[in-house]
Image (tube, rainbow, N blue to C red; front, side):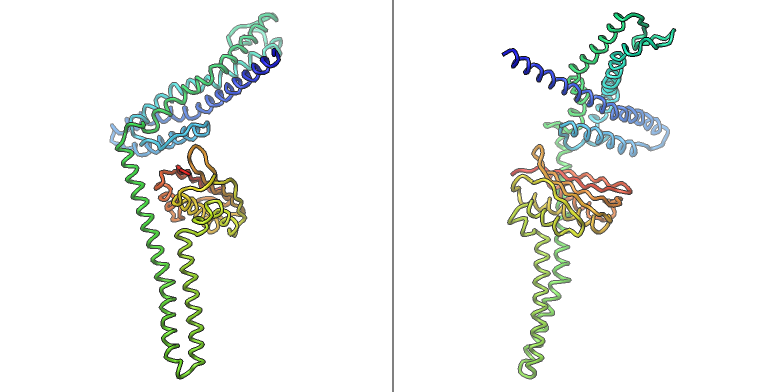
Length: 403
């Protein structure tokens, strides 16, 4: 019985220690974004001074603020906290977060770095206290210890500081993350005008994408299928007139008309597949992505599963994202290997397409990324593109999903 209780206690202590170590890591990672926040606050002050002097610098500062807020959102998402769409960088809530994170967040981040370093230093002090030169203090507390009892007491003090930080670390990490969780996203019951504006923008983007898709289908039908069908009609008419006079010529014309009709039918099937591939409707997203990966001219590996059937419009969007990303990689990236990952987390469907190409993908260059963003925005999803010069390129999409 005592052994069981001791084992349970040891597991509990190990779990708390692990949570404390993770919290210290979170505090340390928050120090980086806190330094950026401090520099951004100073930048806003400088921009205000320049504005008084007639120089406009608010536009660049808004972009810098958005970049810093995105860094903090990415950090919190890595720590398991879901952050929704960011507020506009000029809002009061974002300014409040900047000030809080540049002050309180910076202080807590320094604690997460300095206290463990000091604790390790004092814990190791018994190993090297004898070699401290005369006239130097030796300890972090500004004292010089010359006896073993004092040295061991100093090491115990360092251990106490470390244990205290491990115990209080989770609370300090929550305090450091609190302003971002409360201030960077719109409140659930407030800022409805911004939410209406976002929905209006995504609706406009969805309508624009729909109109572009209709134009593409119309061009495909007009330039391909319609011309072939018109040619088939001409050939059939010529064959009908030649039946009585020249049966052999009529037979050749009928053969050509049959070939033209078959080509028109093949083109029509191609157009239909681009609207909604039958494999998506019949077998689901996983089978459709497996088909895309298998037919890709570059080595393509598929990892993960979508976790079951989803709304057909959502599956079609995910299919379009992967198809467009693969097409871009094949045409522009000079990649040798592509990886497609799909999965669910927190009520969202995630799709990531990565290649080892030369990078440099630009949404403004007409590579299809704008169309992907519009389709994803129509589902209240997010798109992240990372494509530095020299590669690699990663296209990551997350959309809310309901089975």
